[in-house]
Amino acid sequence: MGFFSDLKDDLSQSIDEMTPGTEEKTEEVSEAVGAAEPEESKVSALEDDLTAMLDKVDSTYASEDTAPEPAPVTETVSAYSGKSELSNDIKRAMSSDEVSTICAGMNIKGNITADGSLDLLGSIVGNIDIKGKLNVTGSIEGDSHAAEIFADDAKITGELISEGAIKIGQNSIVIGNVAATSAVIAGAVKGDIDVHGPVILDTTAIVMGNIKSKSVQINNGAVIEGLCSQTYADVSPTSFFENIVPKKSNKKNN
Image (cartoon, rainbow, N blue to C red):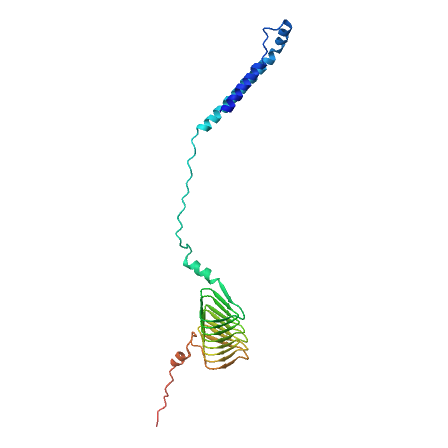
């Protein structure tokens, strides 16, 4: 390095200037120089040490300057295709978590279709077809189809079809048929109930229509006007009695 070479030359020049010239001095000066010879040997040794250190620094930086540069690191970035990488199952799970709300005082005329759930506080005149849950505290004039249906203090005119459970709370009125895998009814239903699982009629339930289910529980106070049959029960009463053959009488007529 040029900087360290110049520094070495300056130090050498300074040391040379520090070295006393004794040829033109008197005997007294010669005696003083003779006494200072040990100091001159120290300065010479210091010059040798500094020279060695500077040479070492020069060789070190020279080796670093001549070292090969590391190869540049390249990163490959795949091009964006413009398509979503989410699977269809994840999309359906994400969409099913979305909940739409129709506020109280809002009136809608027309059909509603959605992949998520719906909270209905207002009123709809039209059919509802959603893949999530339907919570109704308002009014519906039309058929409703959802994964689960819960009506509380609702007024519904039309069919209720659920892939899962249906719960009709107290003070709710449903005029239309009901179909589900299970049902709990505490309100009033005017229509047939077709449930492949259990049906529970609470004490405040009023049902005007036929009930078809696997099992039915009628609490004290519930009112039913219609037929009730466990069509989906594991045991068929009709088949049971058909297998019974009456015994023939052994008495002979005289």
